[in-house]
Length: 602
Image 1: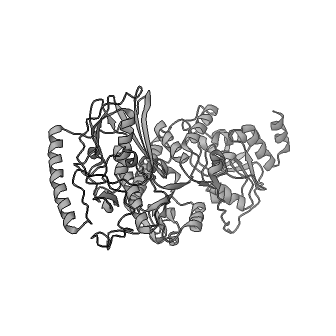
Image 2: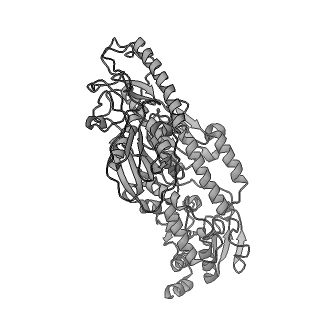
Image 3: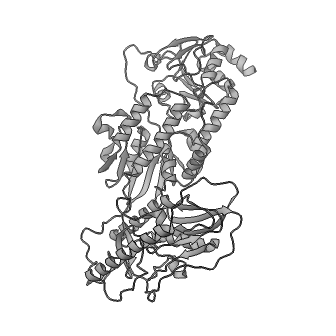
């Protein structure tokens, strides 16, 4: 929000009385604009889905950060406030579709900038000075909207120039549009239906107009532009660094916060690998945002080490409601997958509301990422991703491949994510600085930006009577539910081929008669340890905890590469979906040379 361009510019040093006069005049003008808007029927246009055949009509981009950034933390705080305000405003403008011939109003879409509506103190250009103000900095958005509108040939209905030129802004080339709620507005009229896109990267604000057909020729402007005094030289700084000591704004006790920027870690269910990583990089001033502080509240699901930072923010009501709904849902199926996706979005939005405005870097778990990205919460920030599985698009391709191998499966085709969500995750991952994962296959799929973390290897608990020799003749342990994505069909096939007994440790979710022609025995996983080698030819496996425990106990493990483990002395890794390679590996582990020879000869 910038300048009172519609009012005379003061040439003297601002005083309390000049500020009061300014406020009185603005209130009168604001009231008059409200009446006029009601009379003219000015409206807000909601978002809509993109249509096929849209073309880019115009684009305008500008840097979020000043050259060299700020010299002190107080100035930096106001820039961080400006970026936060742009994030809030961008959510209200992005996606708006303005019908042909209708008038777009900046303030009708952005709304009044108050703390209650989510805005914080940023820089505002007032009376030729850069002063702290709630909602300050919104003119960067209005500048970009105006610049792009000119490029697209829209009819400019209302536009006001700044009274001072800030170095590096569009005002330097006369393509700026100052705004001050609500009477100093930016309004334009497109000649065809237009969809507005507002995007914030880590360092830029980008406005794009999308429409049907080529951009029209520029129209003559009919904008109402107020009479203004000659443009002043650019301010050299804001109230935090100004040297004019007789200005009543020079000393601002409690009005300007200081901020140097910090990181926030947005976490959900506990992963020991990520807990260790965060402990190694977090600083005391950083923030952890969690469903619950598990260590303080006795919740093992969220037992993150919160002692590494001074501030922990919780979303306890959301966490409790999610837990309640999850317990009422079936263990597997499309309904549960839809519930998980819905809750990922709700938790992400809840976490976003708890992000301090001065956070400049975010470390976020994968399932929270799409909603944070589409909600513009990552704009003006760098971010890293803690991957909890393969990208969703890769998961869906993998499930399609598994279904092609086992079309009789009732679970491999029961659910697929909407294409829009896949696109959102793809774009969000593309903007990440670094992607962390302990999963070998996930890291390989993401290329150079992926950084491998070591798997947490549990220390085996000593139990009386446990036999660590796994070479029980003709027996294998399947440490998962009977699901196609877990490799149940491959396990059943190897049991048939080699005449094996299968120790099952989970429920049957494919079919109640799935194992009827195979010798099976049901045990808990802890009871099954030591009975035979552990096998998991999964198509999808994110946390191979049981496999790591078995390997740590010296029990041979045969897994697909989808399990994310590296080949080692105790772990045999075979290609996902390769039945012959899996059967041969099991025969080798069980020392069945005759059967192995038969398999190799196939």
